[in-house]
Length: 69
Image (cartoon, rainbow, N blue to C red; front, side, top):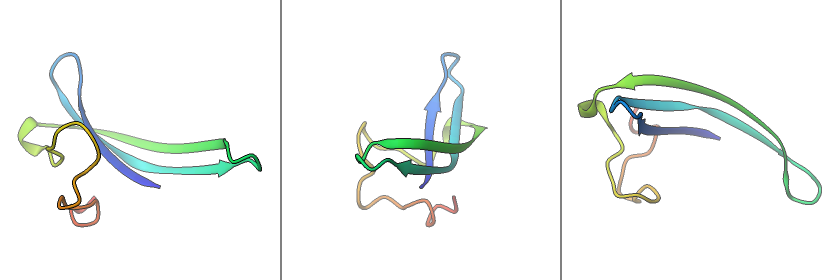
């Protein structure tokens, strides 16, 4: 799975975190192995790409490929 998200630290600095995750599941359907490669990039507030209320990405918002991520 490819992902990207943005967050703000306690000092008010914004970051974009992005990367890939690989999951393996056991026969019972539970996750057995999770491998993640995550990069954190400090951004300015004006560089933010994800601006919607808390919750899932709205269907009308561009996806990662459309945003060049």
